[in-house]
Amino acid sequence: MQQKEGSLNKVLEATDIVELISEETTLKKRGKNYMGLCPFHEENTPSFSVSEEKQVYHCFSCKRSGNALTFVEETRNMSRPEAIKFLAERAGVTYTPGKKNPNQKYLDLNAQALEFYKVNLHHTKSGQAAYDYLLNRGFTKETLETFELGLAPDKKDSLYRALKDKGALESDMSDLGLITATDAPYDVFKNRIMFPLQNELGEVVGFSGRIYTKGLKTAKYMNSPSTPVFEKNKVLYNIHRSEKAIKEKDRVIIFEGFMDVMAAWQAGVQEGVAVMGTALSLTHIQMLKKHSSNAVLAFDGDQAGQDAARRFISDLKNSGFNVFVASFEDGMDPDDTIKHSGAEAFKKLIDTAPSAEEFAYARHLENTNLSRITEMEAMKKKVFKLITPLSSVEQDYFLNRLSKDLGVEKATLDEDFKLKRKASAPKYRQIEKVAITDKFKRAERAFIHYFLKDEYYSRKFRKEFDAVSYIDKEARDIQLELFEYYDFNRHTCIVPKLFIEKLPSPQQQYFDKYIDYMHYPYHEDEFEDLIRVMREYIKRTHIKSLKIQLEEATSIDDKIRLRKKIDAIIKEVNYAKRKNHSRTR
Image 1 (cartoon, rainbow, N blue to C red):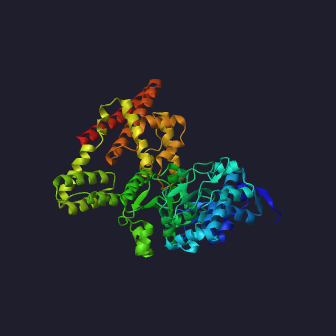
Image 2: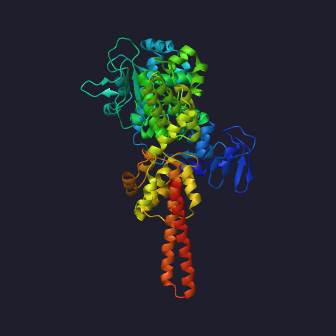
Image 3: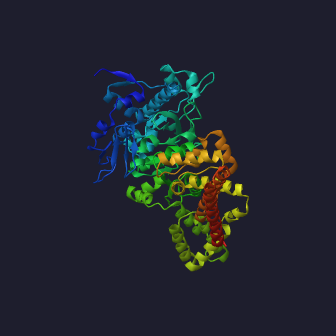
C-alpha cells in the first residue's frame, strides 16, 4: 500500500469506523446506522449504534460515544499518541502533526532527565538505599517501574553534566527548573526520590522530589516551578494511567499523596489521582469531568485531611459532581490502611464510602454534646441547612437519622424543618407588586439560574414553550447557549464557571450583573410560578399584537373577531392571576 501523508483529520478520514468497530463486535445495518452489542459493557440486546455517515458511535445504555480515535483509545487501552499511530498505520497514512509543539524541546529534555533519574534508582549502588526504602514501604519492583520512579543523586551537578553531555542547553535546563544557572550551575533536585509529573498524554512536564532519609531539615516534597510546560494547577498526578479505570468504574478517587495513589494501584484500585496542593482548579475539574461525574475523596484521617476534604467537597458539588468521602482512622492515610488492614478492606472502604452529606452529618454529630440542649439545637440547624437543597427522599432519610440521634419525635423535626423552609423561602411572590416589565425580566433571569442547576428545568421549560418571545437579548443568547449545551451533552451537568468563561463578553457582563448561581435560593414552587409568569408574558405579547391588528383592521367583522380574542385572553390572564393569588395567600 502506498503511504500517504496527512494530519489527524486525514487519518480519521481514511478510517472506516464501521469496519474498525466490526473487529470488536458484530454490526448489522438498521436504517441509516449500524447496530450491535456494546463492546464497553455486557448486554443481550443491541444498544450500540454506529453512524457511517458521521463516523461516530453511541451506546444508548452505557452512554459511551466518540469517534474512531476514542474507540481505539478505550478498547485497546492506548494513549492518544499510540492510538493515532495505530490508526495511521492501519489506514496506510504517515501521520504528520498539523502544528509542531513549540515546547517539544522541553518535553524531550524532561524525558531525558527522567531516564537519568531512573537509571540512578534502579542501576547504581548510590541508589540502593532509596530503592530499599521504597521496597520497605511495600512497593513492588513492578509498581516502581509502572510509575517510573527515579532518584536525584546526592551530588552537586550530576544531572547538569549528564544532560550537557547529550547537548542540552543550560538555558533550557534552567527554564525547566532542573538546574540553577550560575557561573557554576548546580542541580535543583538532590538526594530525593523523583516522581515524574505527566500530562494527559503521558508526557513528562515536571517533577516532584521526596526526601527519604530521616533527620533532614528541609521540605518533604519539592516540586518543579512553573515552566513553559508545567503549572501545578493544570496537572493531576496519574491521570494518564487512570483514565481507562475511571471510565470503567465511573468514578475517580482523589488522594492527597502520590504514594497513596501508588499503594491503591498496587492494591487493585486504579482509578486514583492526586492533586499537588490543597485546592482543585477549574482545569482539574474539567479534566475529571471528561471521564466521570462521581468523585470519592480518600484523604488522611487527621484534622488537616478532613479540612481538605471539606474544601474539595464544596468545589466538586458546585461543579455538578456526586461526591463521596472515604473515612480512615485518625492518624492513618490510605497507604497505612492498606498495610494495616489489607487490600480487600481498603476496597470495601472505597466502595462503601458515604455521600458528602452523610460525611458532613457524621462530623456534626461527632462535634455535638447531646447532653446539652443548646448544642442539640445547633446540630438541628446545621442539619437543616445541609439537607435543604436535597430531594424529599434524602431529606426524610436525614430527618429520621436526626430524630434517632437527638431522641426527638420525627413529627416535631418535620414541623421545625417546614417552618425553617417557609422562613427562608425567597420572597418571589412579591413579584406581582413590581412593575410589569421588571416582573418579566426577573423571571427571565431566574430561569437562567434553574437551567444552570439542572437539565431537568431546561427540558420542562422547552416542553412548555415551543417558541418564546425574549425580553433581553443577552438573556436570550445565554438561554440558547444552555439549550445547545444540553442538546449535545444529554444527561450531564454544567460546570457553571467553565460555561461562563466560554461566553462572549456581553453575556459574561450580564452574568456578573444579574446571575448569582452560587447563592440563589432554588425552590420548586418558585419554578412553577416562573412558568406562570412567562405564560402571562406570552399572552400579553399576543394581546399587543392583536391590538395592532385591530387598529389596522378595515372590516367590522374583523374588528369584532379581534376584539373577542383580546377579551378572551385578558380574561385568561386575570383568572390565572386570581388563582395564583388565592394559592399563595
